[in-house]
Length: 352
Ligand SMILES: C[S@@+](CC[C@H](N)C(=O)[O-])C[C@H]1O[C@@H](n2cnc3c(N)ncnc32)[C@H](O)[C@@H]1O
Image 1: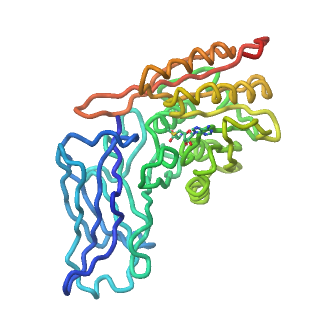
Image 2 (image 1 turned 90 degrees about the vertical axis):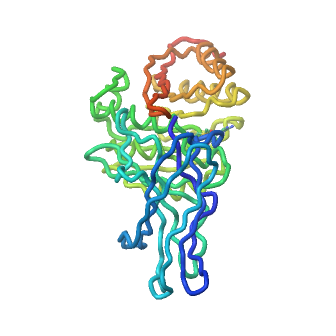
């Protein structure tokens, strides 16, 4: 289970008598926000000049086991030091310059960078940016999340595992699934990809960053529209790859999503709520019936037993799967296993 640095109070410049400080309040929690990191961890807090990326000041802080929050205070600075400055605050592990996503490289604690703040912009917006490196020849991912308690506007562990898996399949290193390898390495132009419950859009954006010639349509409820649009605008897709967003509620009739048949449907961490599973499976069924041969890649972190109904519903809709697992780090040098299921619908199956 990976832990994420989050801002409880986003950073701001704070005047105290004749000095100025940068202050913020952070916590380190799971994706669900239901558990705090229970190990001592040394961190580095850096004031980075915006937009030059120059590090102006950095200091060591420590997250202590058992805590629920940590105050960050950088300074004192003289008012002249900060006059006219726009800043961002980055919090990271001291020995991790870059968060590299991989089965053996993903850090236990994912770093975070604030939105810009400074005179006229105080405090920073309620956002945090993840800068994630996927592979040697892939531009880093910059993904914004909200700092509040939203389910949709966050990155979830299964999304990280899905990216790690897709990278292994595309590069032919690590885990493989022959049918998916074939699809992603077929060189097909305009590979049509749809992501359901995309949240911040991290998985679809990562795929378009790694794979040329694909059209990725991210879908979710209207509430993610702002954050996903921000992330699409900051994305660096590969040549001839495109990323768009369209709202899609699984409970509404499914519109036509793509011009041609869909090749791949991505789903990450969308099975946590058993009540929404019939609607999710019925959307998958309708989409694949309209695009026979489409593959469905589901990344799933088992959170409770009720999720097992997903597998029954998929079976009844005629989907058969290949499976593997991707490891993410967990506390006390343990590992967490995320399930990857690659589904195809058997032909001739009657509508469930
Ligand atoms: C746990 S989040 C996962 C987000 C993202 N896939 C990730 O892994 O980072 C589940 C997502 O499913 C979406 N979702 C839940 N019910 C939905 C529905 N009825 N229609 C469309 N999306 C839905 C939520 O809005 C949310 O973005």
